[in-house]
Image (cartoon, rainbow, N blue to C red; front, top):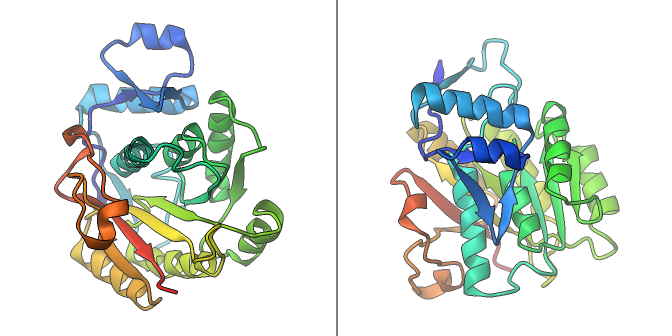
Length: 286
């Protein structure tokens, strides 16, 4: 049985109402470029309760192995806000701080969005089109989150995309959401790997999306916020992505300017760094 480590960062207040925020001064709001990101209240109340009971080390969740009847691959995880989503959101904000206007005129798609922190951060940063994807059970909270944050379907689209049955969804995204140019600049994913048997489906989905073109004419860039959970999962994931012919590198958080990583290196506050958590950039050389 695989044990999933819960969030370690101090909790954030995602309360959608100001009155709730005033009552809970022990938690800070999560802010991206001046926009306070909020979530449906039931999700926030659940997270708050967990944090109060167990602090930063709140309850681990369990998933059954492949040879048992598996839990839905969002049922046990999509209700939580995971560290990787916080870090990826703040990393995207740091890219915008480094290069103002960085995210304008770009289309991005998030895989396995869960509560949608990364997608909501992207929308707050001025991304032209955000496509938020997950399995059907996660969509109601995602749709409510988009509305609570004041975004509309003009630029934020919530779409069902199950990696195990993806063909129609990918076709819909390509033909109906990306416009005539069918351009996709970034694929975003945070903490989407927790059981080995999902890795091939995830990688196949990434391979399909990599066939699209960015606004610059190249393949999309994958930004994967990844927390080490097992050496086996690491090996399966990275070897599978290597087989797609993708280049990869770990993004630097110290603002360094070495070689190819310079455009993606940022200074990220130490509050958002963890030894076992990294952001990897994957791209295809044309």
